[in-house]
Amino acid sequence: MLFNSLDFAVFLPVVFFLYWFVAPKHLKLQNALIVCASAVFYGWWDWRFLGLIFISSLVDFWVGLKLAQYDSPLKRKALLALSIFANLGILGLFKYYNFFLANLATAFAFWGRDINVTSLSIVLPVGISFYTFQTMSYSIDVYKRKLEPTSDFIAFSAFVSFFPQLVAGPIERAANLLPQFYRKRIFDYDSSVNGCRQMLWGFFKKIVIADNCAVYANMIFNNSSEYSGSTLVLGAIFFSFQIYGDFSGYSDIAVGLARLFGFNLMKNFAFPYFSRDIAEFWRRWHISLSTWFKDYLYIPLGGGKGGNWLKIRNTFVIFLVSGFWHGANWTFVTWGVLHALYFLPLMLLDRNRKNLDVVAEGKLLPSFREFASMSITFGLTTFAWIFFRCQSLSHAFSYVLKIFSVSLFSIPDIQFRKDSLFVLLLIFLSAEWLGRRDNYAIECVNRFESSVTRKLVTYGIALTIIMRGNFGENTFIYFQF
Image (cartoon, rainbow, N blue to C red):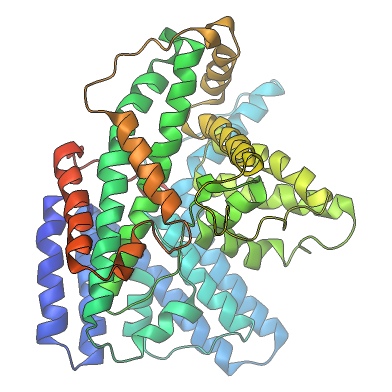
């Protein structure tokens, strides 16, 4: 079920009413309702894949209980291995089986041996990478004795399948979200209003910014051979705003939606396009995944400790895995390699922790140096997005080669509609810049003393969505991951 659909517009009020008016004093009933609502939400797409979520939940719940019973390191490692094998096995089968099979056949063909391979007709379950990593974090944390295992299967199932963030994150840690299912929730009007406002901003990002940028990004990328280098640059920029508005918009809707039900989710985006270097970008982009890889892969590998070769190895591992997590395509791996190459100089020069504060803190505008740093970082990330967006490496390389041709200096050859997309982008960037110190761009509205001002801003955004939104029930980009 899409957040930007009529189905969800009916689904949400019904669940909200049942949650707060039918079962307000019964914690277990509320948790059970969340499980049922999440099943409807996910099963609306394809009910058959509910079994995968149930299997992941059952395996990790059982592993957690067994880990509490054993002190033997060997038995505990075996249980953790079972959890990891079961979760990654399901993920690998549905997401990577055909990819590995095709590449195996290609490798044999390279050495003059043809082998017959039979690919599977597999539909990739929506959000499988997200809930798989979420439930795996529970088993790992219980194994490391950072978290006490739960004996409440309903609460655990609600944690794994919590519908606001089920299919595209944030990827929550059990230590943060699971305990919230044990506590009594009381309706908080102010928190709910704040949640609704964050949802509104998320819908603005998705429907107004992302989906309008997608019209031109898709047109240019799908017909890249017909356009000049300058037009292809515009296409890459449009995609940069499309994927940011789409993904961070989903996260804003998810976080705001969770507040309506008394839950606090982690912040997943912190205005990444205002980053002054790539290291800062990765502290601000898809925070839940970045910190997951840092805690469960990068640090266990040794992190930034040891010699330079170890640092280089760990950096490439983390970015390669991050790229491969996004999909079974060499374009995603190349995207990860590019970011590893961007990141390495900062790490080797010990400058990767330089920009930890908010850019232009205490100032209305950035300095020339800050602006230049942000522009270079945005340019690097936009260049990498080309590989992320293209369907194949050959398409990506032809796209890049066309950019670096004499046609780069021509006037972009594309006709724009009269919907003032550039004006909308300017308004969007201005709002994000002014709100860069907050959890989301328009959170500062909550601090306005005048209720009239708060309402004017809120109604203004809502009106812009109605007037300039692309209401095609377009799916979210990260659903495919």
